[in-house]
Length: 268
Image (tube, rainbow, N blue to C red):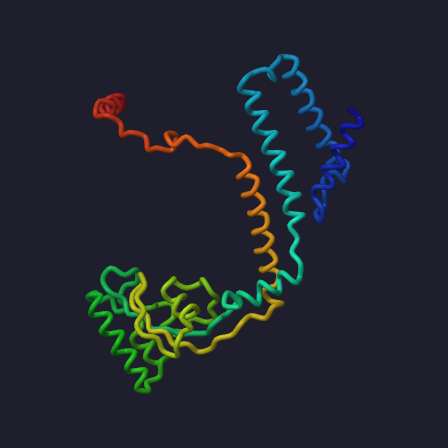
């Protein structure tokens, strides 16, 4: 018993690196020892009472054993899924588009049914009317009007119209898919055509485009590649199981009959 306690104490201390472990204080060690003794006493009594032979208990033990083993293996797989510097650099060079950022501003024209209401709170316009307004607003900017001033006067985006529609620095994936595609996939123009999203029609003015330096994204790339390797390893292990699922288990349950509903209501 003495050796068991010492072993558990060492494990408890080792599991909390960086934080002041309770096992390093006298009171903390006493608390841990008390918990271990209590668990040991209860477990021995359970075995004496043959609880370990109970079918449900055996199922729980198998599940806990599998969960523990799975967690231990996950730690080892993660530790063994290191990524070389060469691989990280190659990923960065191949997918530089993912690390681009843009500075832009926009004007939003909402319409009936969009998630943003008109700024004035007046009658909501139809989608066709909103598109026409957005087209005229864009033309006004093309004719030389200051975009920021036009945004202050016409945009329905309450979060940005007061600052000239400024969206700040945008990374890939931060904007609605339609805007993200226009800014990054399609390259973006200095002044976009009206772009429809669930918020309304946007006219986007591109101000600046740049790529984040490697040092700024290196850690993120390494984490992504590590998680990919872990995921691939898990998929490989799952494929070895050759599990066959019973489709009936996943089918929708039938609606309760009228008789059942009546019974349920009468019981209330």
